[in-house]
Amino acid sequence: MSSQRLLIRNGFVVSMDPDVGDIPNGDVLVEDGAIVKIERGLGVSGAEEIDATGMIVMPGFVDTHRHTWQTPVRGVLPCCTLDNYFAVMLGSVGGHYRPEDVHIGNYAGALEALNGGVTTLLDWSHINNTPDHSDAAIQGLKDAGIRAIYAHGVPTGGEWWSFSELNHPEDVRRIRETYFSSDDQLLTLALAARAPGNSNFEVAKHDWELARDLGIRISVHVGMRLTTVHVHHVKNLDDLGLLGPDTTYIHCTDSTDEELDLISETGGTVSIAPYVEMLMGHGPPPTGRLLNRGVRPSLSVDVVSSVPGEMFTQMRTALVHERIGAFTDTPDEAFAPTLTHKDVLEFATIEGARACALEDKVGSLAPGKQADIVLLKVNAINTAPMVDPLGTIVVFADTSNIDSVFVAGRAVKRNGRLVDVDVDGVIQKLEESRNHILSRGGLLPEWAAEPMAAV
Ligand SMILES: [Zn+2]
Image 1 (tube, rainbow, N blue to C red):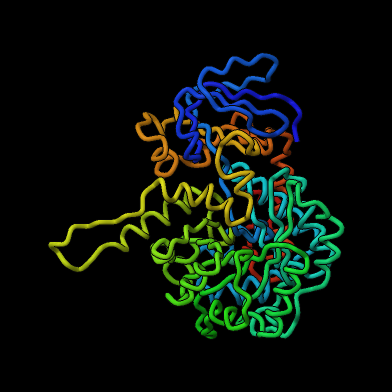
Image 2: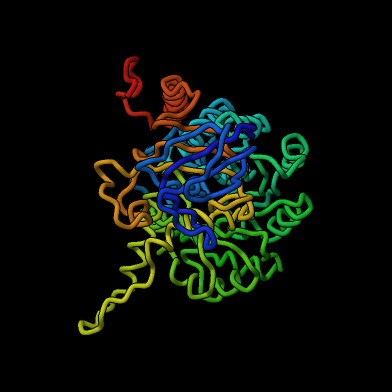
């Protein structure tokens, strides 16, 4: 945490907090990494001042599910099905990862997230082929300075993913003791669990008990449709009596109404990854079906093997998918969608924080919260002139507008550049890693293997 006082001056504050609201020409005072005051015309001396004129001052985005380790193979499956993805990524590619590939994947992936204004990332890490792989994943997140939930998963490989008889590795206990003895740090621990279907029933029971014994939250993929496996994951978990408010359910795309009711009744949270769900055919993002049950979802990127690693795409995809879902075949019935740009911005910020049980710390700007703050340049050619600030963020902005990013008051991006990062060096390591992994899987394009192909 930074001990300096920081005054962010004269920005358009979009707080996402109902009491603070939106404040044109607002100032935000930060002390010891936390927000102290948000007002107009704060008279403060002795603080480092940051001029936010022409910028929106907003909370950092929260991505509630990303397999960050896949960063070195970005784009390897730009248009695949979920069946392909399982066969290629978990069945082959993941097996070629060395610990150093996991490290650069998590480091570069977390930097990518920060660069795009994502200040909190749930790293759903199922690349734990050895304990060294786990250590490398955690180190990569630490090195990037992001706020992250490291969700410890199983190794890659088919035997872990289809009615698996293998319990979650006990190594998570060592990781809990070694890295996560305190819950009050930038990095926290969760269990990246498998529902029955991915595991068998006994294993699921074991894994849920393990997470609860460790006192950590659970994140689990459910309701994504594979051709070969037809399973009602949530129903199966309910049959085992395992549903609870400590669990985030990812996708829920092919989940039945009864299953969504069960999630709602047991206080679970949900992560939708709308781009990947529509691309790979997990099923339609269940945004409206969840809202009808009082469950406000969070959003996630999932995989940069197929999906852009920022939240603008997720917000826009969620918005237009849900709105066209309100279209009917009745010509004289007015088109009456209900989801708005404000909803999806909440999904990408405060609802993400809730899904990580971090809503007291992040997800909105308010006194007492951590200073996880994004300055978004709106006096730019793709965003000017501004009329509706929330509309500017959701409809027009992209990563090029992210001017500055702070995590607990510490600047990780300033004036459009990552702070203290050798970007060229990172890219070189990513390319070396890509070449190692994909050449073994027979997926490296010929041009990429040439010595000067640093593209
Ligand atoms: Zn996923």
